[in-house]
Structure formats: structure tokens, C-alpha cells
Length: 178
Image 1 (tube, rainbow, N blue to C red):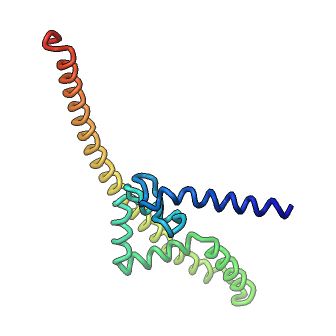
Image 2: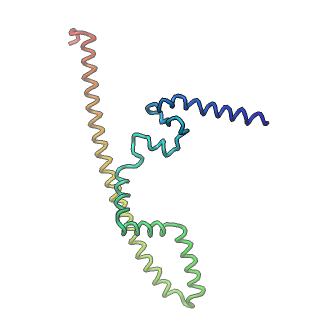
Image 3: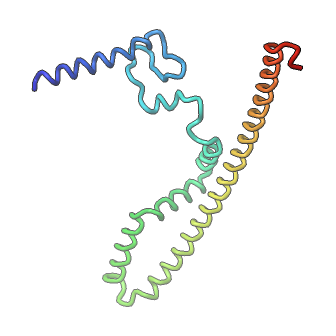
């Protein structure tokens, strides 16, 4: 049993050094390798090396816009808390305390408080829905623009391939193919 951990450690050491050997001359294109002496890259480092962005630019723009406005940050925090189980637990505790210890006839005052809270929370929900709808529209517009650009590029590439194929066929087959 003692002999097993040592060979596995040696095999892991040898397998660890094998991938680093090609990387000593620098990482190969597209392999995501790390320079010698830095070991294996973390997932974040590997993702940072990807040629594509991790988030849609519309998402990044929306996050920057929301971070720059104090009212939007407050609304986000309230909405996040109101949509959590902590919010539910807090209300269970408060309503129980209110009904058992604060008022003998809690219903009129408690109903007023809960109604006011519902008005404000529904407003925050509508703000969130409007924000989400605007964000989805901006993302859809950006996606449409990018897809149209990609379609145009693919069409141009296809036409160039057809032109080159026709030219190659003409040269290989000679002028008789005309």
C-alpha cells in the first residue's frame, strides 16, 4: 500500500512535466498553455485567453449603466432582498411578533402596513420588468446586427470560394471548359 502512493505521485509528476515541455518555448496557438514556471492556468485565466467575450456587450453596457446610477443600485438591492427567502423569514417573524405581542387587534394596522408594502414591492417588480424588457430589446438588437454582419461576411466568403473554385477549374481543365 505504501508503494502505490509513490508511483502515482511519480506518474503525476511525470505527466505534469510532459505538458510543460512544449510550453517552455511559449504556449502554442489555440492550446491555452501557460508559460514555463507558472504551472497550470486557472479556469479564469483560461477563459480570459478566449478570443470571444464571456458576456454579451449589451450585458456589460447594462451593468455599467446600472452601477453608475445610485437609484438603480438601490432598486436592485431592494428587489434582490424582496425576492429572497430571508425576506419571507423576516416577514413571518415580524407578523408573528406583531400579532402576538404588539396589538391585541392587529388586523387593521397590520393590513394597512402590508398593503403599503405590497404597493411599493409591486412598483419595484414593474421597474424590474421594464428594465428587463429594455435590456432584452437592446440585446436582441445587438444580436441581430451581429448576425446580419456575420451573414454578409459568410455571403462574401461563399462568393469568393465560388469565384476561386471556378478559376481553379478553368485553369485545371484549360480553356476547353469554357
